[in-house]
Length: 207
Image 1: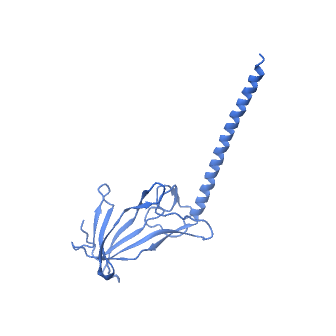
Image 2: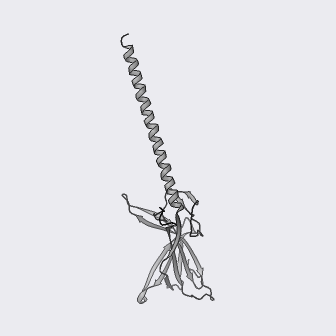
Image 3: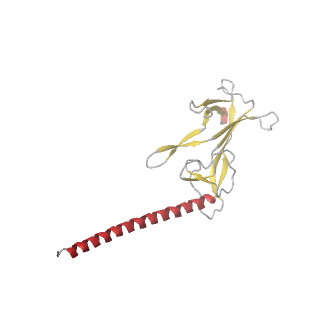
């Protein structure tokens, strides 16, 4: 009988502790969601102040291979429309160097756990017609990169080939340079692709 007030006080103390724990959890979740919301708004603002630009690599001059072709395409077994293009270039002092480009390109990413990321390139073969001024068989590569629209404001500074949670632009060919405000998509897509053109005079290929 004498212990009843003590038990009631114990129950009240237990309820108060439980309510405090629940309130702390709710507050923690609210703060976390608010932080995520602010971070997302900052990322979107940075993306809106970002434009895609293409920078040309030095042109690689093609030479005929031993089989008389300028390049050879090796498709992937699973995806016949993708693969690797092998060719040879002539460098300074007449040195001939074998090279290749691939639709899928793996690059090492420095991190705590070393790993590779796969990036997709946009490769096209174009025939050089007789009326064109430049008849040089060659490989031209435009590397995609990003620049701020307004240099005084934050913009995306990561690798545009990489894939992350929030991206802008499109994986599709024809993404023009310029402000990309509002062109948001879900993760798993590249901001842009390198554009690689293999220019040959007759289009012949040794599969």
